[in-house]
Length: 285
Ligand SMILES: O=C(O)CCC(=O)C(=O)O
Ligand SMILES: [Fe+2]
Image (tube, rainbow, N blue to C red; front, side, top):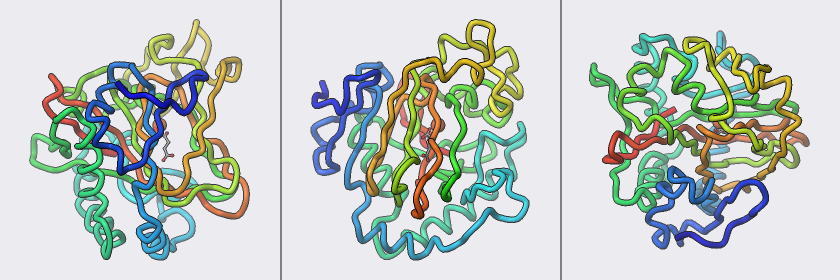
């Protein structure tokens, strides 16, 4: 069993250095089994990796026609897709090439992520899911939050169960244990915290199985989540640059608070779930 929790307040996160992952071969399963709520793995990226990649991520502002409003996101995102995910899959091919370029000269992101997660997946191989047409899902997206920008509240389960883009993935993953991962390339000077609420997916209702994920129209005790969520206890996490966070994002309501100060917050992240019977650990974004 994993020890040394960062905080016993509200949720139990375990912090360790990347050199220690061999001691926690069941780390990811322990999150799925609710023995812990998350892991913070320090030094996933080295300082050299971070400097090299940040020097290449020079774009300011969203891509033209971006579905993410003012926020700059690199790579396609499954949660906003319709049932036909062909375009997402094609964009994933280009994005994976781009990702290999920006990480070149150091540890390749996909290789490093699968190695680190693979050391903690209880022996299950870590793989990208593949569509029935033979396309790989995107492994990750890169999220840039400028000063004042934030990520709104959500549960990852609302995407898995209440958006059309997840129709295929929903048939191949365990339905309850949908985790998130993100690695921090640049931390905000202040703000930009991961805020976790004492409100869980099982306490909420989602009558809209088609657009609930993106319209966020889930209910708790018959009221819209947004109208009551601030009444619940919270926990704040500010992982430092280089850290990889894996947590029970499917079941725990969370958001990212507004970035303060001049440094932008940049994370590379996506989602994790075991295939049926935990034969494989899938990652995608
Ligand atoms: O900070 C990020 O990139 C994502 C935060 C989040 O909502 C998640 O990891 O599920
Ligand atoms: Fe999330």
